[in-house]
Image (cartoon, rainbow, N blue to C red; front, side, top):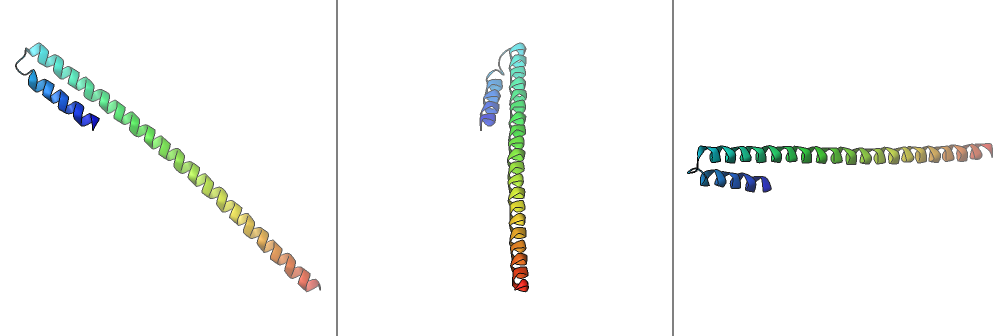
Length: 93
């Protein structure tokens, strides 16, 4: 939204200065180009920050899921060992 507003404002400034001198028009055009470049850099930085945060969050979630899976595997192994032990006790009697 801000990007659109700045572009519109730059466009209006250029249109408003169309009757001014060539120097004023050049300065206005240069200012608009600088503003657009700044907006592009800011947008790119924001996208990179969001990508990094997403990667970190997904990595943390994957690690948590792996840890939970490992705990379930260990618990299943413990249950299996308990059944084996119970079976051995029954066979020994």
